[in-house]
Image (cartoon, rainbow, N blue to C red):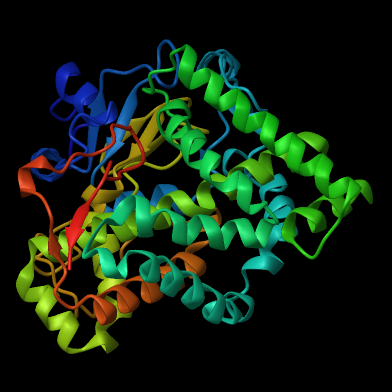
Length: 417
């Protein structure tokens, strides 16, 4: 065990910035493997917890799960432990009240907010969406079928989940293309390392204004959608404030499509990079559900979730953690932990022991995980069924990634069929 006052090898400022600025988005795995070999915790030279506090990156599964599940000792809300200065500084240019986000609060507020939307994400309801999602997938591929080529991101991976969540929330069809522009801004804007220039801020403000517009629209013309239900809860005083309502709508619009879109895009590229696994999947489409889980583990769409802050002095992996220290969980690293997975750097679409944490763990586990899994199932099955000769339409080295500290995604994926 490491001595209490002995830090593990420090991550250089250059390495830390490369990871958390998204410069290694395309392939963070060699760097993460090196960090993981040196210990479960790596000190980062970034004062996320404020002056006098250490920031740690968690690289292994056991410690990641412990932190994610122990919301009493690891909070997502630094104000609960006196971190007001950090909280204000990190959100100084935010447009909406992010303190009202469901992902930014712990119990009991988290339970209350999650309960209000959980009815829309039950397994039974999600499964009832299968025909609708299938119809959307088929319509998108109908549009490009005769072209023999498409940008899989723009023509399929993005519009499929955005149309699903927009239907659930009652977002008018005419508004959906604009959400893509705002989402691109949010990918860089919501992270602490994001480059919040004037254009980015303008997009974020427009997205915030749109959430207000949508809520106002549903107040005047309620319909059979989730936004109308949430508005009615707020009007009935069902423990939902105006700020919480707006934050909930914004979060559902963004989170409801961003992760799944990137799962489909990155997942397709990963399969094309592993032709043996692609052929295996094409030969047996019953493997698609396990393939989705493996794609989430092997090359998932989220790098880090919301940072946690220690609520007390404690020991983690033999290292002393001080109250107020920040902990950043590297999900792709935990999902390739050699102590948890057999041949973790190999893609195996038939992998059975696959307890990944791509959707997180604990009370903040992704509410939309069942929906993302269903969309992934339908998206890959439909794509491989209708386009069996799918292949890259450009040289592999020309594929580029969006730069973000917490979300991983492709800028485009030209394919031919």
